[in-house]
Image (cartoon, rainbow, N blue to C red; front, side):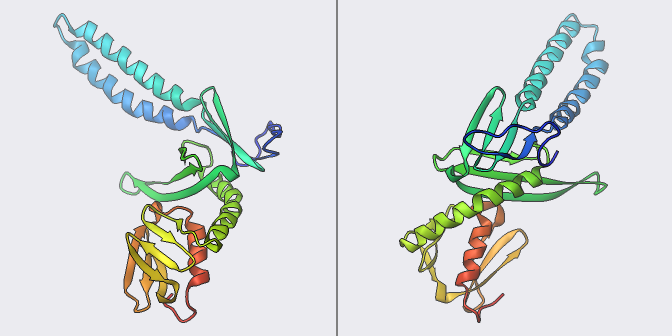
Length: 251
């Protein structure tokens, strides 16, 4: 369900009114458990359970019990997860534990979206994974486990990007460098990556190609290329590249 649920959640005294509510998509763990459990049960039924050996029946019971416990733990572990986005922050619930965060506590957001095909392309689905890292280096993932994962990622980005944008600009104005990946950094002077530097005046352009961000120098040669899914705050990096790119550079 997207947006405020049918029974509206009350506002949070510290975080404000509810923007959207994303409980766990309980069908996914049930399907996964079924896909794993059903073949095992069928195989046992026609093999070990039919054995005349003394250990056939007790071993079948032990395997079925162990499988049931494992799959039950897996389902319950994911059953009560929930994310609620508010005006000034969000809550992350895992089981009985609910942790509140302010949007200002988020340091980075990595985005990964894939279109996957199954059964020779007969079935297709979008798979999302948003990696959230806080200023205390706490990290968690927003995935298709949560209902309306695409909307969750969009709402989340809308809330944190203005705050991150202000923070990045302040740091650049203070001559600090800002990390946008494990190796790529941006400063008021230009880009740097693993000891290499590319001044803004030498930036020739950039493009997205085959799931990668390709950075070009003035000659049009590739200066650096990295996966989009390895970039922190991709939208804000692209904004900065657009601002700093010379007007006569490559697209």
